[in-house]
Amino acid sequence: MSARVAIIGVGYTPFRTITPDVSFKEMMFEAAFKAYEDAGVCPRNDIDSFINCAEDFTEGRSIFDIHVPDNIGAVLRSIHTICHDGIVGLIGGYMLISTGQFSIVAIESHSKLSNMLTLDYLVAHALDPVCNKPLKQNANYIAGMEMNRYLCETGTTREQCAAVCVKNKRNAIDNPLASYGDRITVEDVLKSETTFYPLSCLDTSAPTDGGIVMVLASEQKAKALTKKPIWIRGFGWCSDTPSLETRSWGEATYARLAAEMAYKMADIKYPRKEIDMAEIDDAFSYKELQHMEALKLCHKGEAGAMVEEGATEREGELPVNASGGSLGVGWMSEATGLQRVLEIVLQLRGEAGKRQVPNASVGLAQSWRGIPTTSGAVMILSNE
Image (cartoon, rainbow, N blue to C red; front, top):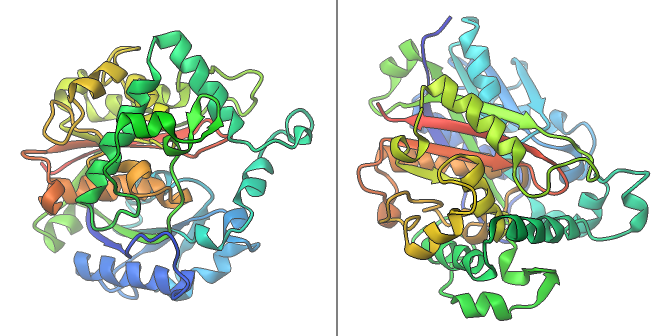
């Protein structure tokens, strides 16, 4: 069994709101080519297995697996698809290497959401077909209800949620991959159109297109192939109840349980002190705060104050979403988790440019699969 597993290569396309000039196949090829160049590997000779993270519904075609091998160099090779977020794909790759039967594994995920003309209908299709779907409501009402409950239970304010939007969109200005960087104010967020009370338009992330590929390697291969491996120290994943009627509305239970698993594996006892930066889900503004508390980066009800005080700024005590998060970069469906990990990898390598967090050596990436799920994953990464 391999002692450690590292990310040795990353490749990605530009993230854009609309990509009529490229197909998803070209997007996959570009990201894969760059990742293999970065890792110094040949897909035909060096990579033992491939993983694709995709969902047939969001791809708009059934058995999407058949479109994957040609584009990432996996023809007639070991390959499988995980219908889940990209971090779960990385976890699958880690497990394959840990068996000792594989030394190098590539993981791919992408977003071509600009092709989805009826995304709201697609999301609604995931609701309970007996109790919820017949209501024929936009599924984002769930986020509005959850936000209202979270604010009530914790005392967090709308202004504190708006401060998350301001921070993340400002951070995205320095990220050349981000689609939604902007300079806005708390007042702009509060005055934007209410969509699902108390959510406003600016509280909600918007979709973006892009492809990401990562290459994992065993410790022996990693040390031989690269001088800058990023080690996977721990991970966890969890799916809470899918039912709207039985879930906990005030907290992100799935994130808490996934984090506990990851911290145990990484031997992290004091997350706020031991983690240098975090890239966490902010599909909706309140989610960043709710996830911070679930990840034990602060106590329940404290996340909003941390944002207001500047503790989560890039130069703050605990930088959160230096990339801009989904509010600034854009929401990428199943590739969102890989975008979180990508930012941590670039930061730990010292390759984040203007948005570089100084002296970062341990980072946390966390994902949530989105409405209406209660599924999430956490990964701890280190450059040491």
